[in-house]
Image (cartoon, rainbow, N blue to C red; front, side, top):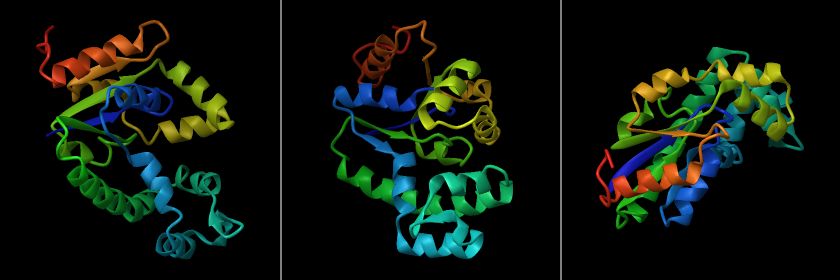
Amino acid sequence: MIKVGITGNIGTGKSIVCRIFETLGVPVFHADEEAKFFLLNEDVRQTLVLKFGKEILTDGIIDRQKLGIIVFDDDEALKFLNSVIHPLVKQSLMYWIKLHNNQHYILQEAAILFESGFNKEFDKIITVVSPPELAIRRVIERDQITRTDVEKRMKHQWDQDKKMELSDFIIFNDEKQMVVPQVLKIHNVIMGIIPLTG
């Protein structure tokens, strides 16, 4: 089985690309969604409240927006959060991979695949890229947050060019090039249907 990581900075459209792969029958592990799930874990809740205080809670549940305001303003706070969540996500991924070991290939979606060093776990890497201004606009519309908040999140991610250099495949989601043909080509290469240069 080929393990493929798919990443891209905030607002590039990773989720849309992953849905296209899923329609092709490719299992996708959504690391970012899994991380949100672990915020509901009682042990995680207690650990984070102990670190950041009860102000991160709304009705007794961790409020991701309140937590985000703290961690995206403080590198050490973000490191702490990642040190709590990432091992749990990795453990969950390893179990999920075992459940899908009969597949030709699987995908794992994660925004900070390179930043966390998790890219080393994969045989191939796909990076989804978009013009920064387009990505910012998408996030503002999607999350109903300010440009300043988007830029705070972006500063914790590697530059797109750096990710592209280290990737096996690039998908351009720039509203000019069609995404589906790009996904189909990568799928056919990984499946061995066409050569890498085809």
